[in-house]
Length: 229
Image 1 (cartoon, one colour):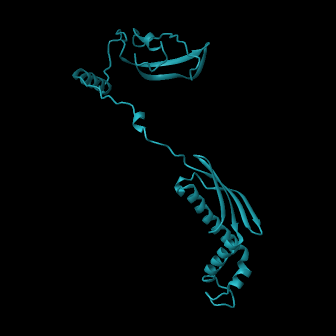
Image 2: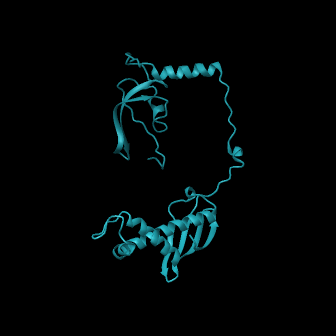
Image 3: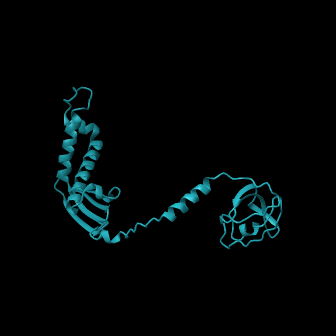
């Protein structure tokens, strides 16, 4: 398509284009879409495929003109891509037509395009951190096996009611929390299974359970951090 075109690549991610699609190019495109339509359109008084272009333009002139303009714009966008030396997949989103003004000599357009920035990967190897594979010792394997066995081992109930709770043992506890003497949401539970020393509770809570006996009640005092949820 013969159209005056000026392309400006603002930076690696943005470009603009100003163009004028001449009237003769629009007319040629209009003739093309009209001939294509004449092969399929049916108008009373004419056989299908034998409808004169003048009759088609008279009835469907506005629609055909819009179709011709769309095809001209598509051709123009291809010319813009060639001028920028990029492929269509490098566009981010659709081009934005910021000006579309019809004049006697044709249509003046302004187009804005967003481009995928070019990222140089010449020195990509320097961005990859060095990976050091640790040396596994037999003691490390045994320690991990003991951890796995510990997490999967069944719990055994201690029948001796005088037995005191030790660090690392499990206990079912009922608790209720208070702030300034008032209970707070989420601060109460019954039959909660807790491993003492797991640090799953607020700091200082689990340590104060050590030494308690079955059925014993105790007041535990802890300090909540200012940013506690």
